[in-house]
Image 1 (cartoon, rainbow, N blue to C red):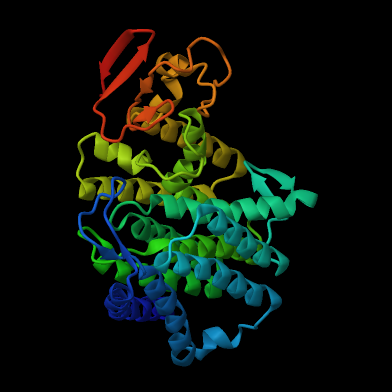
Image 2 (cartoon, rainbow, N blue to C red; image 1 turned 90 degrees about the vertical axis):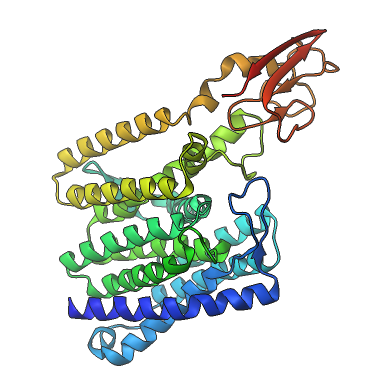
Length: 411
C-alpha cells in the first residue's frame, strides 16, 4: 500500500503543478472555450487541460520508475504495451489538435477508429467475455467488438464533459475502484497505472471543479476514454477474470448509458445523430432547476454507488451477479425516466404532426398528411425544432397548418 500511496501523491503533485502552466499556455495560444448557447459557462476558459493530464500521467510513471524500481523492473516492453501507447498517441493527438483548431466530428471519429485499430493489432482485443456466467466467443467479430468498446468509452467520457469537474470526477472514481480491485487480485502493475490516473485526476479537479479555470477538452476526454478502455481489457486478461472487464462499464454507468441513448434520441427528434446538443442527463437535471454544483455532486453520488455495486458484483457468483445487473439496469431506467429523459421517445402526439415533412429530413418524411408549404414549427422539451428551419430561443411550441394554429407552453 505504501507504493500505491507514493504513486498517487506523485501524480497528484505533478497534476497540481502542471495544470495551471498548461492553462496559461493554452490561453496564450488561443486554445480557449468560448461561451455559446450550448455552454453553461460565461467566460472564455482554456480547454487544453488534457495536455496536463497526459504529461502528469507519464511523468509520474517515469519518476516512480526511479523511486520504486522493484515494480518496473518486472515490466517488459511488449508488443501489446507499445501498441497501447501508439494508439493512445493517435487518439490524444487528434484531441489536442481539436482543442487548438476545431475539427469536424467525422475526422475525430475516424482517428478514434484508427487508435482503437492500432490497439487491436497490438493484441489489446476482446476475444471472449462472460455475461451472467455465460461465456461468449467473439470469433471473427472480435475486431468490431473491440473498436466499439473503445468508441463507447471515448465518446461516453467526451459527452459527459459538459459540466465543471463532471468527467474528471467520474473517471477518478472509476480509476480508484479499478485500482482497489486489481490490488486485491494481485495485479500490481495495472493497479499502479490506474492509481497514477486517479492521482492525476484528483489534482486536476483542483482547477476543473466549479467554477472551473480550465477544461480537459477533447484531448483529455479522448485520453481518459482510451486509457480506461485499454487497461480494462489488459488487466482482465492478466487476472483471467472476465467480469473484471465489466467493472469500468458499471462504474462509468452514467456517461455510458447517456452515450448509448443519445444517438437514438437525436434520430427520433430529427437531428443529426452526432450533432451536439443540450439534452444529456446532466442537462436534464439542470433543466429541473438544480445548480451546476448540485448536479455534479448528485452524479458523483450515483457513481460512488455504482462503484460499490461493482466491487460487490465482482465477488458474487455468476447467477447472483446476473440478477444484480438486472436490478441495476431497472434502477437506471427508473432514474432516467424520472428526470424526463424518455420524453423524447414518448412525445408521439407532437412528432406525429411532423409526418409528411417531405424534404426536411424528418423520420416520417414522405407521408402526405401535411402540405409541404405549410408553416409548421415544432418544439419538444429540450429542443426547438422547426420543420424546415430552426427557431433558437423559442419559448413555446407552435404548430400551424392550413390556417389552424395550436400553441402549447414548453414545460
